Image 1 (cartoon, rainbow, N blue to C red):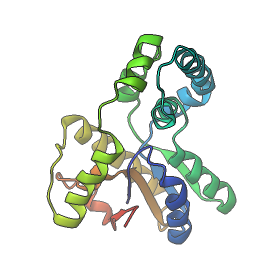
Image 2: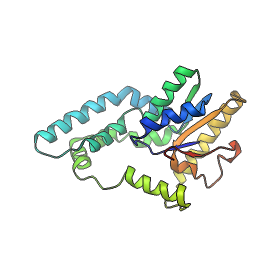
Image 3: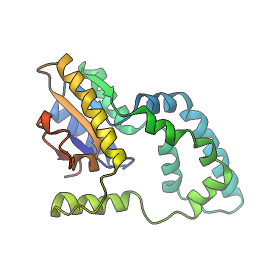
Length: 208
């Protein structure tokens, strides 16, 4: 199990290197088929909408930092972890499977039209709270280096982990004896319910 911080720019540097070193035959990913298909079909459309709004805001003198705009792009783009894993699979002949639940992706993405309107984009790029990847780095450091769990394991995470484990189990039977790699947000490595235990995973924090 390879734990990542979603949308962290370091993933471009580290993720491919780790995948190459681990040489998996099968990669499973914390990404739903629905979420992937939605972004593949509509990502460019929403990217252009973001660009139009940001251009308008900047022309009116609103400060829009590149990092804030990148965060908006990351919400509508195909996740980099998929692109990097897909490239490895194309070159190596390995298999890649998004195994997360469609339901929660649908619930989050159904509001995208409201999210990416001028008023909300302006709030996102001008009134941004000082959280995000920096906070994730702090929480991950507390957990992996000090054993301090300073984040909740929610009912949603439990449902999704159970669903992903069932999918991985089906694939494990199909690809018996093959080397598996599961890529997920680092919080899933905590696994307080022991849902992944039957796979006897080696857990790796991408940035260590």
